[in-house]
Image 1 (cartoon, one colour):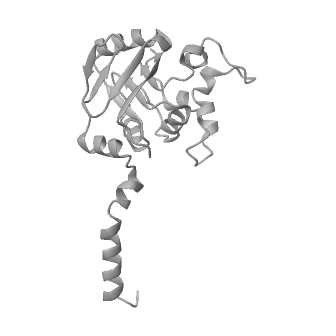
Image 2 (cartoon, rainbow, N blue to C red):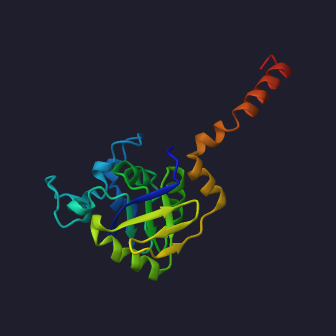
Image 3 (cartoon, one colour):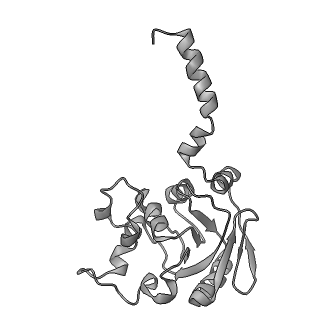
Length: 201
């Protein structure tokens, strides 16, 4: 998993509330167990017509936000079914951080496990960043995990809370496998001792 330290990028405004995981990645794309390749189907039913043509009005189809790395979204982002494909699709598209007033619990946890930083801020802060995001590529937002701040294009800074363990994992690029591998020496030592104590196993 890639480390997350500081991100300065274009933020896409998505003021909709209750954006659920089926909107993020519709159920027909859940057949794969690969984390790559889902970005093209992110928000599929909002991005494309039934015959596969882009819907020009959708924010991520507009030139100013095609390379967005941050989403500024409405309340209760990631609700619905607990599909890990949702953060996979966001990450594969290029989204590394989502800012909202609240998130569904399972989606929130899955983001950290996949290298995405979900940030909870008060409504007035999200409103400010939403206005910034609507300016497109001319207004870049900076997310600094180390200092736990989000800085708008005009320099306004907002502090956010993050669980210390989740922060450690993101800063060091540690997913569940990475955390296990950190203990590889202890695991090897245990396995060696167990083999000597019970050679018949």
